[in-house]
Image (cartoon, rainbow, N blue to C red; front, side, top):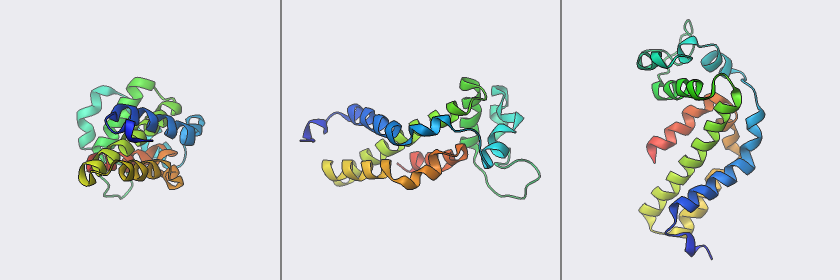
Length: 154
């Protein structure tokens, strides 16, 4: 039944995007919450695209907090998000949703390449895509760091 999808990875990606919007699409109406305020919304250096190269030297948390977190790719993605969508929270949530779909799709591709078992790879990736715990990475904007980590692993 699913074998017709085996050689159509873009159709699988489209299916993943559809599924992720059905399950997590309600986050598009969320606002900035908790760490989103300190790490994303209240950071002026993220709001100008010309500051992009300097984000490799900025701390992840706002200045003054004693933290050793270093996440320049996440910070750059937030800055690009500001450039494209402005300060609208739905734009940040949209990117998180799409990144989760892409990360899950890359997981599918990796599993299929390793195991050469189409159905098992697809089922595992769909289960990963739909796991309720991923609400913790998708709903808060700062959860993007976790989503991006899978993109680089896959």
